[in-house]
Image 1 (spheres, rainbow, N blue to C red):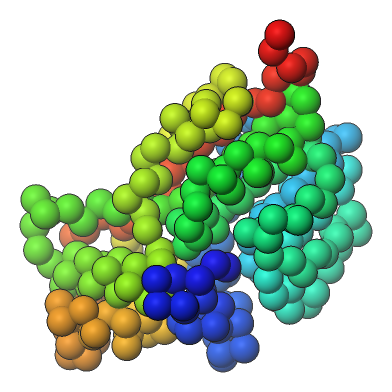
Image 2 (cartoon, rainbow, N blue to C red):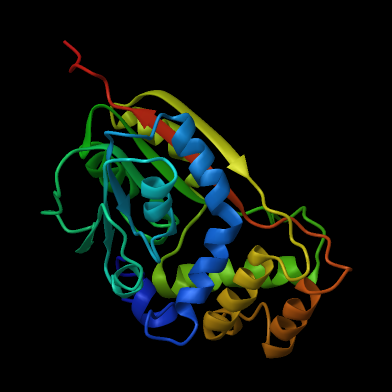
Length: 270
């Protein structure tokens, strides 16, 4: 991941892969969103004969499901740290430890290029989307998913919304996370020369003990210092928000996942 405004990096300053439980935290997010992701990828045609690139693959749940459920030919899973990917290898899955922000990142051309919860942590959005679009083979598709914040100023305050606002502000200050531009995905994909652009949003329910609730609780724990530094919460408020997530009183919308896609034309425009 790229440097934040103060030089921080996603996997070094906050969400360190060597930290106990980090793989499990990522998997909780996967449990909340994988079914929706796979339904969209299969609706876009992902299947036998497709060579796929999974950018920022994390623990590799999407990569493996593309192989095992969609029956694609191969998946190249890319991450700056592939330790979780290496733990769960399957036939057809190739690993590449690389930084997608590097100017020389060019692993080939693919029928599907997919990145989920990656670009929101990176700067130079326009350049990176154009670069990823350049990795899509003619007739292929680029699919991008990232978070959309549903805790705006008009949202009724709850322990959850207070914690989320502190988290977004703290992560932006430390590692550069910025979800404010995510609703611009369709326009950015068109600007990258893609066509038949579409988008959808999925909002998983916040239920006691649900994967998404456990994901946010773990995420707040890892970003606690950054959250407290905003002045919006203290440790007691974060602890209270975790308890609120696990209570029957919880009434809030989780951050949504916006997924947008665009197709590479079969032939270059004249």
